[in-house]
Image (cartoon, rainbow, N blue to C red; front, top):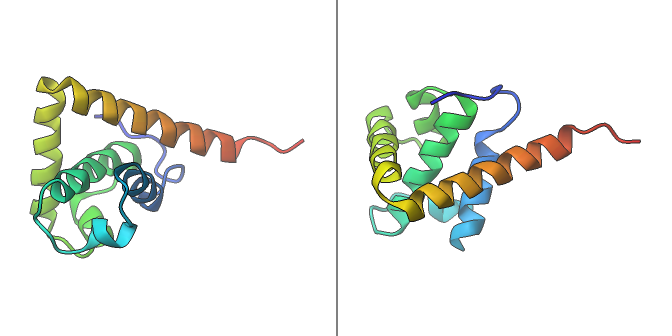
Length: 112
């Protein structure tokens, strides 16, 4: 997993896009709930945030409602396994990653 420049994509950008795509509010993404599919959506957000920001597990845990770093790490590993075996998960994460990169690229473009 390689990280982009941490100053480019913010964890909030990941949370906002993942929540929007899942049809939930960011507050729902951050609340304490182990219900599926909410937990899976949150794990996907962990994975994207880790990959695209390069932030540590403790940092991500704090940004995701004060979760323990081991919870975040477990979620990232779960999604990494799913990416290898589930083409739907792999495609969804790929699309989300592209959208995040395009959003950041567009906002960094000089205004003429």
